[in-house]
Each structure stands twice: as C-alpha cells, then as structure tokens.
Length: 73
Length: 242
Image 1 (tube, one colour):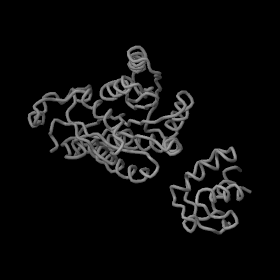
Image 2: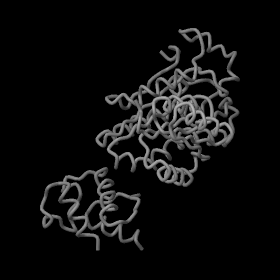
Image 3: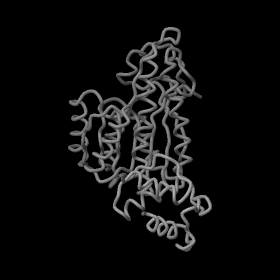
Image 4: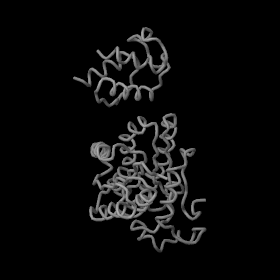
C-alpha cells in the first residue's frame, strides 16, 4: 500500500530507477544502511503525512511496507 | 554565538545545570529548563534567562528516568520552541554507600536517572537532530566515571556508562551532522558536593581548589560550538583525574 511511496523515496535517495526497487529488495542491496532506513521513514512521514516510530529492524522494502501498514492498523 | 539555537538542559534548576542554562542564554540561545524538584528555582532560572539575556525560556518538570515522560517532554518543547539544537544531559543524583551495604534500589535509582535518563532524552531527540542535520549533545559525566570513587559504585558506574554512551552515539550520528561529547567535572562547589567539603580527595587536586559551576558552563559553551569535536570526554577537574 505504501510501496510506491517507498520506492520513490528510495530512488531519489540512491539514484536508482523506481522500477529497480522490488518488494523483495533488501535495503543493503540498495545501498541503504540501517540509520538510512530511519531517515527514509522520516521522509515517508513527510511524504504521506503519517507519524511512525521505527522500533524494529527492517530488511526489505516489503518489510518496511508491512511495518507501516501494521502501525497504521 | 548561539543566537537562533534552542538548548534543552536537564537538571537546570540549580548547580551545574543552572550555570549551563544561563551561559547558553548569555550566548543568545533560547533555553528549555528541565527540572525535577523545585519549581520555584526553575522559574528563577527562566526569569534570569529572559530578563538578563532577552532570550525565550521555559521551565518543564520531568523525571528523566521515565521513558514515556521524556517523550512527552520532547514533543512539548518542540511545540513551544519549534525545534531543539543542543541537548545537555545534566540531571543527576547520588545515593552514596559502600558496595557491601548498598541497597538494590540505591543502585537502580542512580543508574535510572543518570544513565538511562540520558538515553531517554537522546532517544527522543535524535529524530529532530537527524531531520535538522544538526545537533549537539553534551553529557555531564564525572571524574568518578574515569577513576572511580569509594562509596560511589552506583554513581561512578552511571558516569562511566555515560562516557561509553557518548562515544557510541558520536559514532552513530556523526554522518548526520550530530555531535556528542561529555564533560567530566571534578569537585565542583554545588549542593551535591557540599557533603564532601572535607574529603581528603580535595587535597589531591593539582590546581589546589574546588571548581565552580561557571567552569563547567564554559566547557559546555566550548563544546556547543566546537564543530570538529565529537566523542570526546573533556575533563574539567583541576587536574585530579590526570
């Protein structure tokens, strides 16, 4: 549900094509470290107007997508 | 020098925290004065910052050892001041005693306020600092955390813990423009050290006297503006922990 927004921000951040960002892509493959994912979430908060606290480690794009959905209830 | 900056100082109603809050105000920073005890004293610090230096200041009562309370505090300060640039983790307590007799709750209480309190504040402010790509954290440690002190296993453990925390936070957040340093005061004349006024340790201070809260405030002002310094523990102790 938030995949497109995540993919857009990842692509802006890393310079890769949006189409290259897959649900199963890991952040480390994309060159994003764990502190970057915290920042990414902050950008997402601004982009989609939500407030979420990242209190667990996420490995893949899909993990983050599901994590946000779970927090959104 | 700190004009346009917002500083949050814990334990700021008296002693070292009060001196740092006023020093930062004198340099132009707006100041959030965090206190746990006397509202009257905290309000006096706020008044002094406003009247003497013309900055914005406000007092907030908060138990820094309480994770949820510090979260609330940070969001309140953010609402009132817009953001935070400088955090000074100064709130600290002592519950001295020999380890052979120390009660469990004396150990826990000191760790909770002195060490976990700093963690709580940093935890909730990191998001703001990262967004700003700017932040300065100053943890008030102690020479007891460097060289130990008989009768203070809880206090020195908490203060040594702050030095490790300082270095790890400095390493984690350096890429985001956030600096984290510690100050290790020696014997500074405050309410906290009143009981130690005839400690034999005082004779071992190379510079021959106790320090003043102003000495620590000056060190804090230096660290607040020292753009290339991070992960450092600055001793301000008259040489005692050399």
